[in-house]
Length: 309
Image (cartoon, rainbow, N blue to C red; front, top):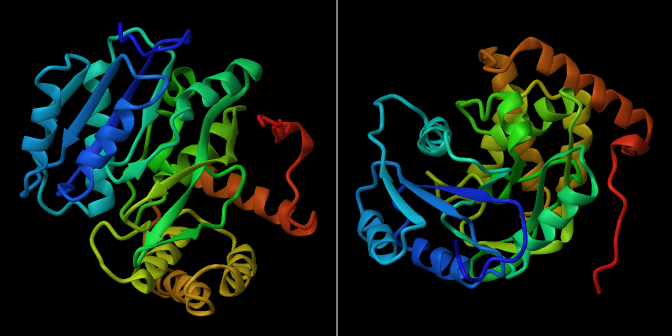
């Protein structure tokens, strides 16, 4: 048992890492400073071609709770699909362990020191919470940029699941264009769980979302539009969401237009959706209700705000 742990239910953590030598060491150092450490942390090397493996092995050498696992990529898998397969293979390594919570952490994240301690407290307060997170700011060209956040959407980069929820939804679905974190939240709500993010818990994402295989923010936003199409997002909801982001998300105007263009490409090409049709029907019903409720969530599905000082 780790000496820095506070009184909490046992939890494990999985980090997928592909060519993350630039960021991984900082992320590991950040985790070592947390007030609440995992009992097991599996870092999955997703067939990296840089020094990712040696960085993991160096930190794992004197720490039995940090485990290195090497995955062999399957040719033809998309970047996003491979990332999900890496997480799920890591999960298979600890499936027989006894734990209550599962944390997913990207290899390019810096967390506040009380991150997990705070989220476990939220889990204890509400037995229907299935998946939670904080939010993150993105590091773009050396400056921190706030990311627009839907309170019921929890980014995979720093998600924490109640294990019962994760198992009930079957974990992540490997989606060609990403969005597996959004899909996991939708499926959790379908099963009667709550998903929620807490904006006062701010992490730093040192590599902007969607840029695992591209250096262009515009390309990343375009890919997010493809992602929205793949998730079955209602066209009107996507349009309103993108218009809002034209004014609130950098790069202004282009960010929202790129999302619309990505969604339009998916629609024109009639790309096959990889999620079950009942998931699409559920999320569209939610979105239509939000449109007519001026984006408000049903009170029974929200989490009471608390002042932590």
